[in-house]
Length: 438
Image 1 (cartoon, helix red, strand yellow):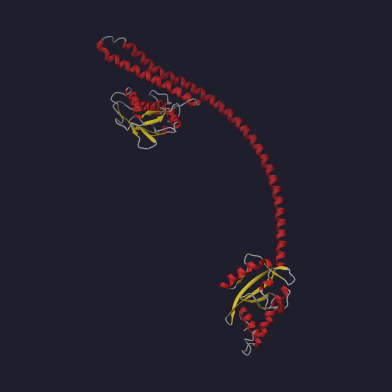
Image 2 (cartoon, helix red, strand yellow):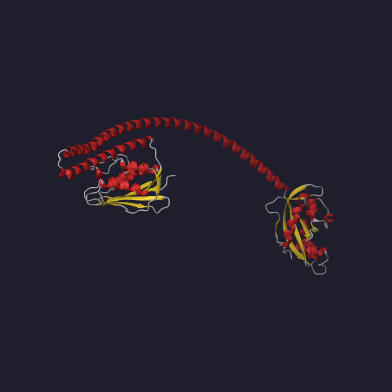
């Protein structure tokens, strides 16, 4: 019998109070349980479903400052501070709906109040039980005032320790900050010297590059102008020798040569002017509405008169004409440059293709494809660099600035250019540009 659960103990004691166990052989055991009940240090309070106190032990009476007769029959709220009455009513109702053994107020601070009105912190364990068909709840109440005071002392010690740590941390941070500022000052001085040294080296390098560029430019201009001027001079001399009417075809052939050479020189001069304007930011674009067909006719006409023997330029004969809004002269320069390269770097009796795709609502796409010498793979990454010429094109006329100009202009017009090339098989350039410049 000594090993009964504690709530069974309370039930027996409570039943004894109600004369329910007399003459049933429990008399001696009841006395033992009463001694245990009264001897435990925790306060024991038993309430019914109306929260009326029906049983307490001596520890509970001492804890709250009441006598046994003063507590039994009182409502439980007499042991709670007034400010907790409303919330305790709700918690109790919720608990009675699903009663179970548990700790009360987990995660919250609970308080009791003595007869003299002094509040003190408590811990409460709840144990429901039934007796004669009625529900009761036994509360085990522990006064935790000393523990709370100890916790406050520990909290204060921790707070003081944190303040000391914070002060030491601040002192350390100030020291680190001072060292950091000193290091930064040293770094700034070192960086200034490095920058000055780099600027000096850069200036010397630029001076060397400028000297090399001037030499290269003069050599390039001399070569590129000398050859066509020589051709013009020769053709002009020969034209004078063909004075007969039946020699008109010979005169026409030399006139064509002169036209081509003049056109070539004009193109070089325009390229040099474009480079200068693009470098200085002085280039200005004239955005106008114009016909796609009109642009194509001018580009194709200019390309046809420079074709080599047996070369064929394929282009769409019938296209859906519509109005573009771009800089017409710049677009003509771009396509003329690409077609000129395709003709120049392709052998005689080969085909050159100029394709147009206007299916996109906002973008128009062009392709210029040849079956010429192609661009060596190792040179492809430099093909848009100014004055760069691929290794296999050094013997051909050219300045190495055409593709650089084309790329710069396209980027300024919100367009794009890319290419695919294979040496000795040909090259295809892909251009995309908005139909209407914003």
